[in-house]
Image (cartoon, helix red, strand yellow):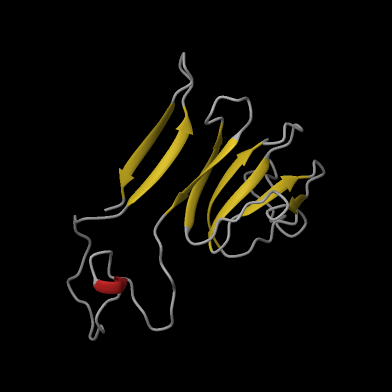
Length: 156
């Protein structure tokens, strides 16, 4: 919470927004038109939809809303995709990746997405330009027709 003096207070527990998973992104919108901004939190794990109760607290309504977004969702946005007057939910996923003990991800070009065993210290392996996966963002762009425009940007 903004204390209006240049500082913030942690009200996560009080607001009932403890979350689950490894948080990656958030989208805020009043999807049910009750006057309060609701939240969708994307995670490495399961995304969570929180309904704003209007009293400074939120309720996890993921299951009730029929939302099941698993894997590695990195971001989301609410928009009226089909111009029906109701907000739709757009979710961006990074890639399919399973954390398994002792495994490394080498990229989509390696068989099974696995790296050969790595040994030694990696010296002189600084940042360099190379091929990368893409993150996709989406936002509603209202022109005369209310078309949807999507932007893509390279991570590497």
